[in-house]
Image (cartoon, rainbow, N blue to C red; front, side, top):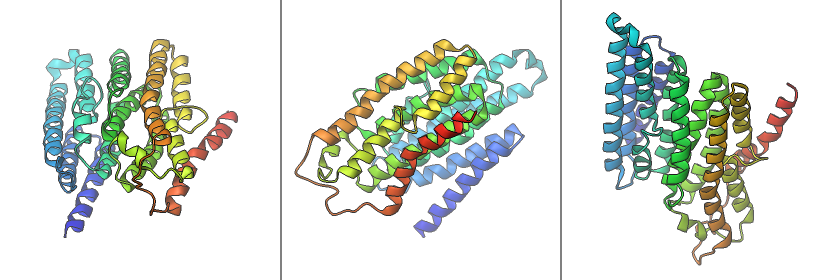
Length: 333
């Protein structure tokens, strides 16, 4: 019966997201986002984590507040008397969507919620739940200065706040905030650029989260328990993290290079420079994880009796080798 409800909630959550991004009415969009919220919370509660109740309450309060602002903006924009405040309405609308997504300065709830739920729910929270707000931002009027400022805040805050974290779920949350700043910048260019970045981010993130979930790893200190003899797995995992940081020649470098070149063509030099510097800072906590895994060994071994499945190896190899294909495609243009 539990599996039945899980499938039901997953189906409704997927349908509500698709309905939100395909609707032309903002009231239907608001209702779809509420449906998405009410189906994701039971999924959070189904995890065995003892902090899932606290995380679900925090998530509900934040999302309800964002929904209130969104509904207020929809009603405000419908009143003809307030047509002269279109810029303020668009900023309020984008702020509500950014709050739902967990972007700075509305990001404080995301690491706390992420640290209290399972890796499966983190996969949904950090990837699937970004789709509707991001696409809705692309549909709405985009104030350039406002979104550029949000991108700068997100990139800098996430890089600095992720420095001293030892909880891997919080690190992945701050990483998500950092990548969200790149995605917002990609939306300033085009929806296609955002799609390339988002799909690449999801592919790399899925590999890392599957790895953490498979071996029940939640803190950096647990990385030292990996079997020192399994060098292939360590190397693949390290390359995935370097790819997530955008280090060439891995796959994660390609979308960042694409966004940077597009921003420079739009004369947004300051934004592109700050994004690059923040990526350099975020590489620190990625390297800290891989350094712990490669240099520190423990008597315990989480992987001694576990063999890597072919599907997992194939997925990782595909993610790491796709850069060659991307390079060939870009060289033809």
